Image (tube, rainbow, N blue to C red):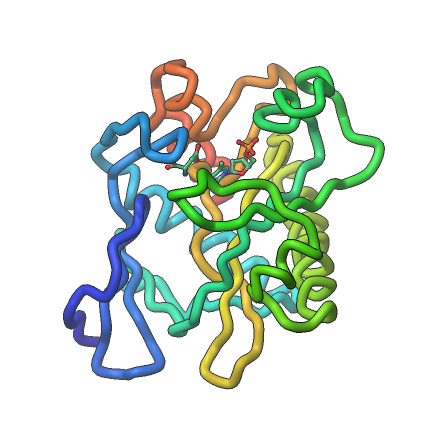
Length: 236
Ligand code: TMP
Ligand code: ASP
């Protein structure tokens, strides 16, 4: 598979065209950003870790009937993916209160939510990715059909059910995570982007130690060590 011109550079990945117009290569970067890129860093080897972790999780989800853009991992840092047109909604799923939920609603940090919460954020850096509801999605013409929003929510809940059980077996609590979806060449909505400690919060089940990007956001140190620990646990 030939890596051709770069199509797009995001905060965590570069996307390249290939000799197949329906496929792209995602190269996972070592860059770290937080708070809408107000805080920037770099951790050598982080891209490789996220590429490997995402591969394991996409393969797990595919096995459990979730359609994703994942085709195969090409090497340590490069993933072959179906080309999609990204739907500009960040779908956040929460099991435990922390982060912006705690700030916005005052739910104490670490409280287990009485039910899983699915939220939509408008993927727009200039606006700071604001929280939106179903009606905003339609007014903004992000989707035209209520069924698409219901599909995103049900997919997000299914992903949560699979990942939560999987991480639990690996002695990790899946606190919350962010998903992105896209439309493939036939217009079908499939899971895209990545699933990694950059986009999930994972706490050790016994100690609640944070093993995700909060280590960078909150200056806790040992970012790479934490990501390595996640990879080690889920590889077993
Ligand atoms: P939040 O508590 O900051 O809203 O984050 C919720 C989840 O979404 C958390 O697992 C981190 C992830 N996330 C991203 O992947 N990208 C983002 O831009 C933001 C704000 C959060
Ligand atoms: N991904 C976002 C950024 O780079 C925010 C975050 O994950 O905290 O700014």
